[in-house]
Length: 266
Length: 331
Ligand SMILES: [Cu+2]
Image (tube, rainbow over all chains, first blue to last red; front, side, top):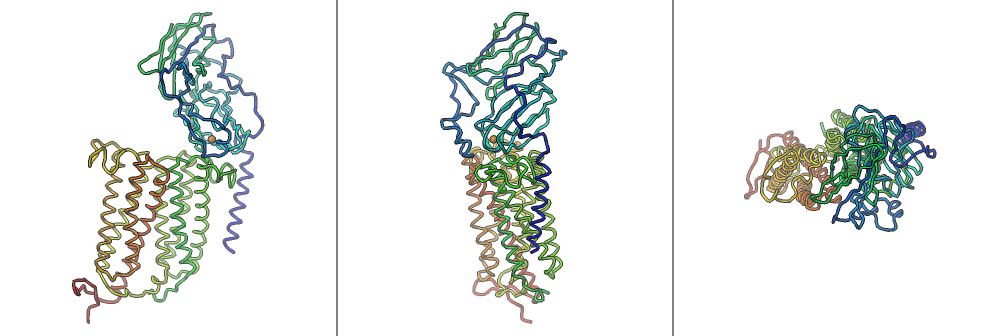
């Protein structure tokens, strides 16, 4: 008798909490706002120029990306009939290395850049983060979306910015966040699916790019000047190179993460 | 006093059930840590804003974390029921006190569990959560033992065999050492030092690690603690067995303790040798809780028998055919 009434009280409190919390937070199940999954392009003409950086990242003779299993969540496993890889070291047959984050590390001090009006989208699709590596500007809206018919927790683990961990139990859910400090990198993880990881750079400016599956990257609309360019890879660390940008010209750089190799600019 | 104490069978059974359930709960908590699933349910006290998140039983990490919460919720309700029952029916004031302390402990424990999730598993909170869990189990073991028929009957030791007082002291020391050893293990787990010494049973190929930092130090301390705890357990077993006719309430849990201490060492070795495989890692935590409970049972009964013996008058240790026995002094 006593136990039954206690259970009812507990259930009642829980119900109130569910109803109370249901609409709260900045979590929304509503369909997407305008969100742009491409790295943010330079917005206004203010602190931009017409210089361009093009380049390529390599990792020659490396081990191929390890295969992972998603059996810990049958829904995730069912979304991948074929092999799934860690996405840590993504190389093609020629050793072109994807997911290298390239950005202007120094040379832009004292300049300010408008915050893009478009949101940056981090999607959870097939129980993987898309994109695996990306960048966002300080103050720019970040939308994290759950496109999977399973639940995820979105756990950002920055050092300078504020850590957060939010659940997305249902497909189509989105959460919004803005980072208020520059930081390379902010790791994202899902504690439900231990293989899920993403890295997001937070920068004061829009001059960054991520190498494609062909290993190529580009940065546009740079003002003329001397810069230090850094390339970051989650397994291989960082490399830097100095470049001089002239208006209207294209500087070509390459980063080689193979053992013993280095960066070069030409 | 004791002969006036009624035997309350329902309370005793609930306390025994609950103590066993808490060993299961601690094992489930060990599973959460072994899977690193502590943050797989990011909110608290609800799970993904709900009482039960969708498909929680199909997804390994959510099953572990949410399952841990469900078992914990059940333990909380059962503890509340037990405490209310004891407060209403139990005549011994100190037993009512232990019950209330147990209830406070389970509330604090739930709060620590919530705080550690909401603050992304700070080491101090997670270790406190692990340490308080074992204290809570200890309170329940006390309640289970002191509400038993044998305990409340005040019945004398059938054969006043053995220096029970010395057995009680040794058992007390063993219990304290096992608890400290569990705390060391918790610090090691929650600072990620479980593989700081990568080989077993040796340490970096030698008896003593060639260098010490925090991780290697805490890991090595846990191994040394294991040796001390095992030594005490077998010393206790030896002492108990020397007095062959000692009460079963002491002999049986001591035997179990000795066997499970060997199991525990094996599991600990397997944790290292398998690179922290989830199964041995989890069972090592659950079995640690069982060791503490068994050691506490031995301690309580040894103390009880000692107390009863002293209530019955002077006792003397005599030797009969090479077996030492305690016999009531002829007055
Ligand atoms: Cu996930």
